[in-house]
Length: 316
Image (cartoon, rainbow, N blue to C red; front, side):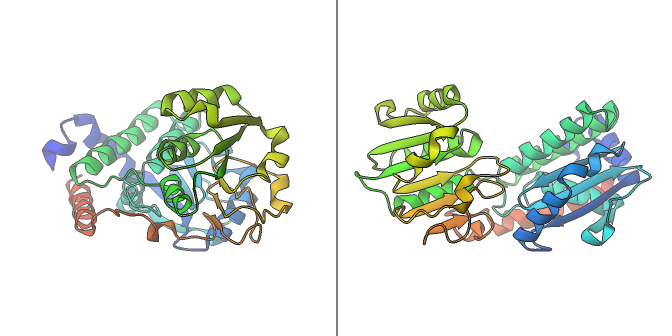
């Protein structure tokens, strides 16, 4: 344990400093429904805790809203919405979040990136000090070491599950529509390209980015039709399969039906489409994706990493 975490002396010092005044206010999909999480995130969107509190950062995703405060005098706007931990328990939660142990798909990679981005955003906005930022980034260092040592890692995510589902419907005559050009869309097409299809309609505000993704992933560019978001509606109705992974606020698709499509997989947050848009509509909010992955992280590995974290917190 010592050689794993304390080969960098500053890591031990970071943990000691963080444990003294850390407070975690949180809700996640295990404490309330996914729809309720979405409603809470929407309600607090324009008055995020981190926007007016020095010494805190917020981690807000489709499955959680977590606020980590370090010596701040003000709490959340309404404590009735949140569970609360402090000291080593709060620090433990932060480490386990970074490890992906509270993710719907345990060991997935995106939460690690989201946490890092949240910390760096708070620092860029002068909400946390340089030292506090450095201490929090050492949490990511610890989590990365833990994930590697105990194999708490998976390449599966919402996109790979989407590919597995789509494979059951796709054939050489299928027209696939992809909406979005971010990480999830990239992962989706990387895994989907080996499946039979006739054409891909790819919709995004950034066509140049789409062309780069096609080049990187080796997708047959002659089968791809690039469509700007403003022209999307008529093209979507042509699709046999629809995969959506994009950030959005309001969308005309939410008021539309897509009876032709054999399946719609929507991993956008919030959902791009609405319930009832298709007989096979799957979204983050209506599906438990952990039941659909092919190779979940081994439970023995989870127990081992939990024990390692407990031992680590006893040392500091």
